[in-house]
Image 1: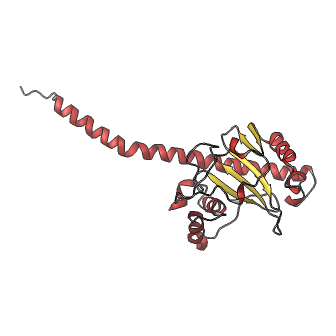
Image 2: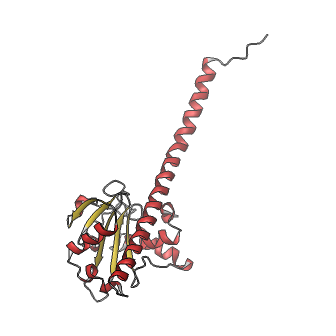
Image 3: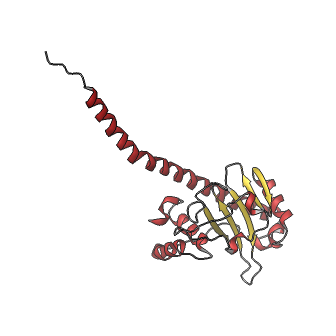
Length: 219
């Protein structure tokens, strides 16, 4: 009767094949999981911030985000911090020291530093219990615009615009984000990937247009 048991060589060969398949597929699975988690954190953080802003507008009986007490004075870090502490679960208060909540340096997708962009001229930085670091700011120029800065995983890597760092325009009514038409997607993606001061803002537009899928911003 013929012996049907596997030989040691056959077992080693099978294990090698399994190892190769795992090496090819597991990193992609892990990366996809991380991307989905980051996307969910980003969406939840932006939506929570928008809800908090609109509730603050109701509480203060104002219709324009510019009239909110803590936003109206862009240098009032104390009011900014009070807003976060009242309406969010804050795990770390960094005040005006960005480096305690955000990375010291950020890159665009081409590996170029964007650490000196004006998006970091915020007044009060905090890290939330979901791991995201956030800050609010109102510009002092003629546009008088308000922005939300988000790093979905705080100081942790990759520290890349469009992957974990995003800047969102806060609209007059307290909603957050800008609508991008399908015909403008290619142009917005190009601006997101280039070394621009406002690349994080265009990456944010792109991710929102892609149904909050961070992994799609390069596709």
